[in-house]
Length: 406
Length: 81
Image (cartoon, rainbow over all chains, first blue to last red; front, side, top):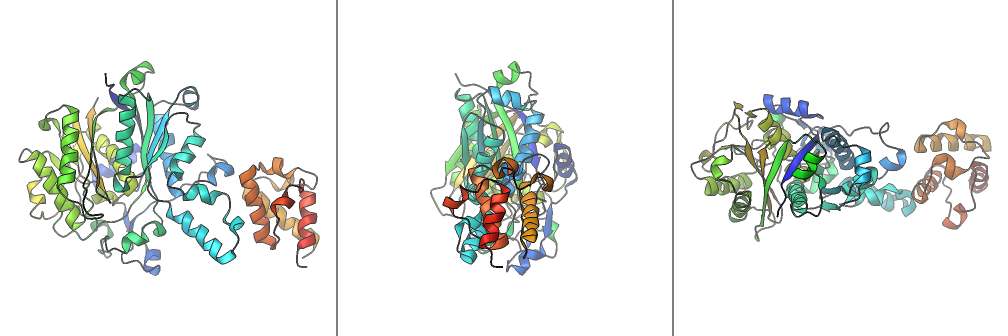
């Protein structure tokens, strides 16, 4: 007997806000978090566009011996997780007494690697790299830090699935709960924002060069899109079995109905249509619902010409002319990459809870493929109870989550 | 650099890095207890001394340095004055 999985807490550290209320308002008013960063230009970047985010100062919250192992994305994840736990009414006593799991998406930690290598090259003495570097440099840095800070005793694993990492983390967490292996899992995604982390991405001309108008640069599905804008931060959702949530009197926000996934088995960077189509179809089949029940689709669409076009084709393949509203919140946040699959669950849930669908900002003219979708260029007030969220990544990894209001 | 200057600088960099009040760093105090050092953060203390004074403390030597007074003597002896 599969168990139901519910979301009982959310926390986020994003360019759209540091609290759920701030983020809700940013979504409602179509605020962009994108800026031009002159330092990137000096470093030789083709595009100096990025989401704007401050690294939190955690001196008051964490000891020096805790902070020293945390790169920026772990600090974002800590902030998001503290808020999500509070939102879910979970305190340290609960975490101490139960086997709570942790599955977090993260797929790089470039800044500490670059800094350590610089030190090793310059000083020729590995001691000078310091004790934090090894723990900051590993892909699992977020989960290793959070698991120790919160003294977690269940599943403890980082999910590295490129730009679908955060979504896979939630999906895999849901599977653990459905199958009775965990009662509660802290899930999420984190993304570093420093220039070193995306210099090589800039190098393959993937980024928008609309530098004269940063807030207009990320324009998923628009005919004149010219590439993505890198973003980041962290997003945490607390998921648990329905029974566990009821037993502890937790505030139930929504239900994770299903997790679909697939691999394109194709090109390393160019997405195709078949893989995403299968991920969507699997999620809908496992949710056991009719497509008509899906009131909103949060697309992966990153504002790249090929990616958006192929996702539009996949969505149209599945939904045909009976199309719910489709937007990409990346129009406001840029591409939050390893974080995106988790943050977009929070963005969509906030819209669902507040009866609106935020504008796919900068969507001015459709192209041949996006014209077949139902993309609001302006915010609409709409009640919906079920949404679908897509996340796709390099190597052809695809994840689709379907969430229902409770 | 005089020994007094070296001691003052040591206190300043250690207090700043390990987030303790300068007053607790006194010659007879135990380094590990005062700075809350474990095996990992001890590496950071060694690195900090090396960066600040150009004095390398080998793994075999660090075990014999228990107090700040012993640290000052060790560092001052090996500094290029």
